[in-house]
Image 1 (cartoon, rainbow, N blue to C red):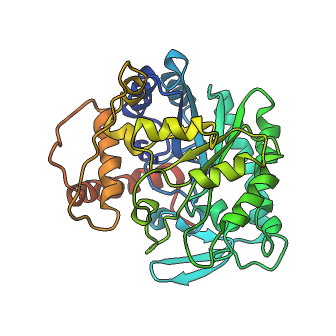
Image 2 (image 1 turned 90 degrees about the vertical axis):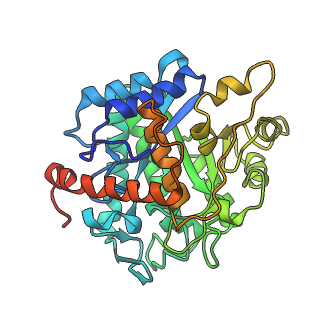
Image 3 (image 1 turned 120 degrees about the horizontal axis):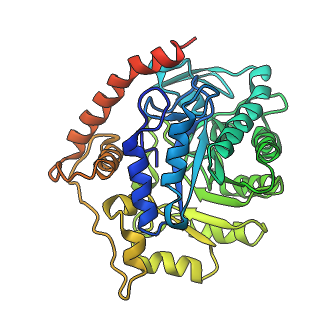
Length: 371
């Protein structure tokens, strides 16, 4: 999840360290820090971390150490929001120019695209130097690399658009560059959509082909998820009834690649997670909201009698309200507080938006205004 716990200038905070320390101490095997930006020009939100050359290395080292307590692992999820960049801080850009309801962006030039693999590689090298034992390249959820993979958003006619081989070209180049930057002793994973769940978007067949192509470039983990944050698109949880979302697709992928596979999305019970692994569909299970409602979930599931988390039920929510509720709950865990037991999605969205507004000025002071 995008925890949005940075200080508004791309640096980790003590609260963020506490969040990942809490999970590490509760036996989580691997924590992924959602939306760590490879540069400051296209952030998802102003609470993102930025693995920039002038970062505060001591703070990043502190975060890496906190998430590694007790033998746990912690990786930054390297991202670039592209067309979904936070507009007050960016001039959003994607593989193709878009002008649709709620979203406008310009088209990246070939020279800009050719520079992106080195941006990811440099960020990965910095992560290694700061003590992280792995990184995850984020190619899902509608952000830049997901945009390149999707024919709905990638309408290019040059070497970066058209066939699935061309659409995944920049991702291949990024993974290859990242592997070259960190060497063989640092893990490299990739999150990718099973599909966009949008008419005309990335299909499961194309995603499976892309995974086979990219996995051969030195990946250590394929993390399968789905859906997109494009305006107006329903979330995966809105489209699914009950149970995990992408297990059948993960099973198909696992049969065709030698890289370990993880599936993320919709796991709510111990039995669901256990059965997904025991059936051979996946090597690992990724959890997000379950670990928010119960930060000690890993310990509870490995006790004598597994105890499942109790999820909140909301009768109504504005768009983005439930996501905001879980994001603000991350802030509660990080601060070790239970001060908001009656928070509604509407309350959470107001808190979330207000916090973003407060971070705009610090971001601009640190990185300058959007070009």
